[in-house]
Image 1 (cartoon, rainbow, N blue to C red):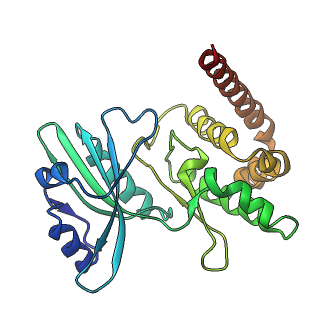
Image 2 (tube, rainbow, N blue to C red):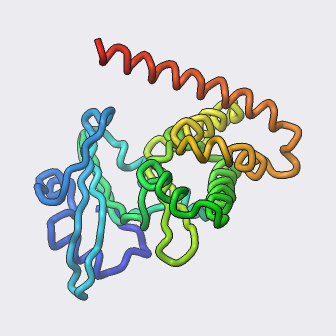
Length: 251
């Protein structure tokens, strides 16, 4: 097994207590709640709640893959955290033959895809939308400035937490993250288009221009038009594909 040095010893003991410290144990594990969604293929995601010897409970996610994708995802999480990106913590990973797995901590809050519209409704007129926009722009700007692109930057992968009395954002699902050497504009536009396509329509209408301005910063103001046109073209194409799928499903 492979463990991150900063992982709490009680958490590791809880993981070992469920025999999740080996590939064999991870793939034999039948507890927790399996999470399914379209496009997972042969990947399997399971939400766990484990009790530690110190009396605390730990909410974790177990990801199991055929192949070595878990190793790459674990490395991506470590790289993002080293760059100061708020995300989950990798706990443990393992690989043997054609199977791999990893366990990560849960991040607080909920996906903007699920809670974003309610958040905007509850905070109408109190400045929270502007704070969300500023923090989202900062998160994506820092992520891209560190040289990364996400490749699945939908609002389902950005978590919003209000539990500490302020808006905090976390980026998850870093399996496809990478650092492009060429065509960075293209890759960044793809990330931004995925985000715009998936955010609540009300936010897109009211806040998108402010988001893009904050994301680009003063030095990037001259490029705003180029970015917006490229992003808009991709979003329009995504809407067309979505509409075609709906029409095909209705037949």
